[in-house]
Image (cartoon, rainbow, N blue to C red; front, side, top):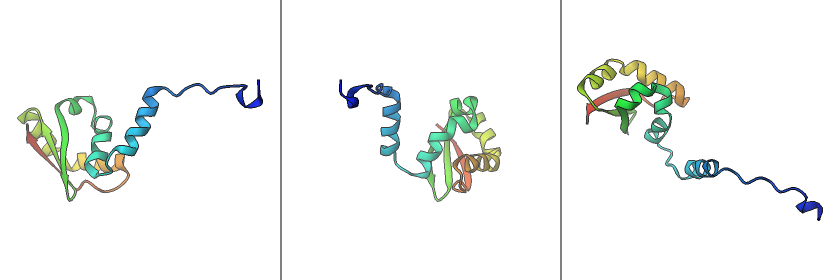
Length: 101
């Protein structure tokens, strides 16, 4: 056995390789960044009932499954924007607008 072939490195798990590839292919937009951290930032209950669907000039549109969620998240808009901005490490979300659908 030659010194070069003495030890083989273990193959990387497929999930790791896919995650690395996905990071290089994902668009670097504000919406994509918000979507990537959404569930972890807002929690599973909110993430299960609402999802970010659009962003334009700092205004994040969140689509909610029910009117009660839209109303609740609309009232929490400034707090939600601040929480997302902290998670993103920059002030990119200036307003959160909620809609049903």
